[in-house]
Image 1 (cartoon, each protein chain N blue to C red):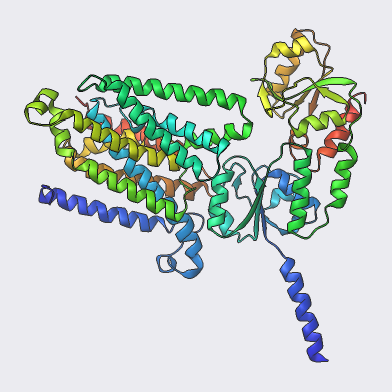
Image 2 (image 1 turned 90 degrees about the vertical axis):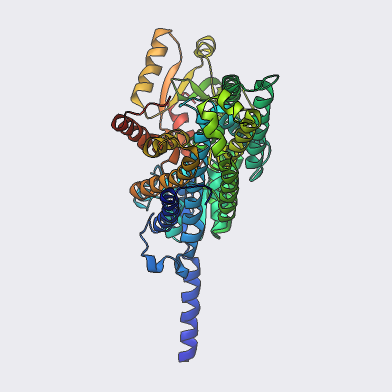
Length: 258
Length: 324
């Protein structure tokens, strides 16, 4: 009997231990997703701008997300390193492979990329992604007819806007807004201010945390007597390829006449 | 040996040992400081052998290679502002890297950037030296023009490409010695060292060339082939460095001047000194900075200029240095 109890305890110990993973998350969006999937406790390292959820701020930082510090990552002895295809991801990936650390880097062009990423991360760590994915699909599978027009600005000077080839475009469509920037080959492009004056979109959505730039957008609308309404949104929610695009959609619906 | 005075020979051996010492010493520093006794311990092997060692080797390769090329080019075109990127190689390598990362993947972007650099070298030489025996100024101008042409293509591409690529190009230009695997670090250091030795064999001829072209001609130096050789070898070294670590600036400009200030103008001695001092300089700077800002990373290219510029100005004041 004693032996049996020991055996049972041993098996429980082993199984719990084998799931105590050590994950390093290199970008804010993967951090969010890991937390959402219930893996927040397993993250042993993340990067500077990982600020959501609140707990992510307290995790050990391994540098900035475009240039993480490999030595710090190695020190944390991770089982998995997860990040986005951005910045120096290729050379980081090569080095991680050389060090024998498993890693995965994701693209984030559109909503199906985001869903793929969530499913894949869930698959690696044996979690169920269905609830999270279902929530996204509820809003992003079929879009309402677009009644209004809009433009999504990520920088005012120079004027950089999101094209239709981005997940941001899906956020707009989810709120029934048609993006006036039609380009489909590129993601974020610099455009001429005259285009906004000519098209007069119903909404100019500025996703920025810099006051000076927001003021510039305001004075631009005033000077050219645009009818467009200025919406200032939180870049931490709108610009991040994670499940919180749902929050972005709901926020945008609330603030427009959807 | 090699016609060096005993005093200089000792100096060279001292620098050789200093490089080895600095290299091994630098292995200790980074995130956590490892005592010498544990340096080759098994539990540290991944950290020391696969992270710190390749980085230190790459630092040495970049510093040594670019410095020796800078010295050669400064003598060759008789201009103190000459540097390894003078002939448009950095632009060529950058374009190769960008094209490689769009159309190909992984290792091929390095290969493509190397090939494009080599192509540019021959292109510039073909156009600048046509029908002429020696034309440093037309070589420089052709190189600068080609360089601007490449960077304009990159600028146009960065406007039309995704922000991800723009970030990549920007980071590439700042230089990075952290991305090399151990194998590629050893291999490229070997290549750079080999070409440097071959360049060194021309040092005496460069001394004569430095006095004046007519003097060199009457002394029996084949100027055209000297220029060709130094230019091609120097550009190959630069191409290796740039395709592996990006356009790390300023080392190739200042280290030769510092050496010339401190040790006089004998190219033969200076070739060896710049090689080792350039390498040591970059290892020290990189190790210092990565330990201070840990766990952040600051691109090495930024730091070389930040530390090198004031150092050069100070030295210049002290030695009242004026080249030609």
